[in-house]
Length: 168
Image: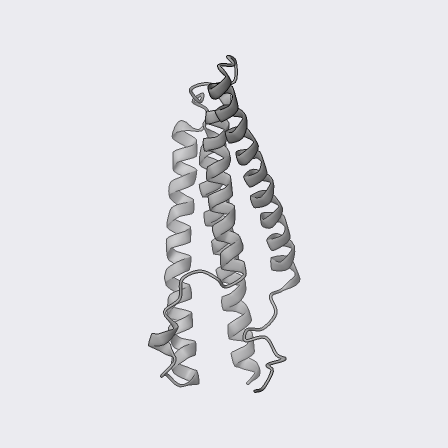
C-alpha cells in the first residue's frame, strides 16, 4: 500500500483559500441561525407562544444562505458531482481537455445565473418580505453570491491549469 503525499490537485491560490474560509463561515453561521430559528418557531407553536411567527420566514431566508454557501464550499473542496468513470480511461491530455470544457460550461452557467440574479434583484430586490418586511434582496443575494463565487472559482482554476500546462 502506498500513501499519496501529493494532493491530486494543485493547491488553490491564497485568494480562493480566503474565500473558502469566508463562505464556510457564512454557511456555518446561516446553518446555526436557521436551526435556532426553526427550533424557536417549533417551540413557540407547540407552546402556543405568539409573536414568533417571524422565525419561519427567517428559517427560509437562512436556508437559502446555507444551501448556496454550501454549494460554493463544496465546489472549493472539489466535492461536487463529477463523472470520473467517464474520464479515467482518457490520457492526460484528454482529461485536461474534458476538465477545461467542463470548466467553460460551468463558467457559462455561473455567468448566466449571475446575470439573471442581478436582473431579479433589480426588479424585486426592494419588495418587502411577507412577515419581517425585509428587502427581498436577502432572499436573492444568496443566488448572486453563489453564482459570482462559482465563476470566481472556475476562472481561478482555469488560469491555474493553463499556467501549469504552459510550464510543462
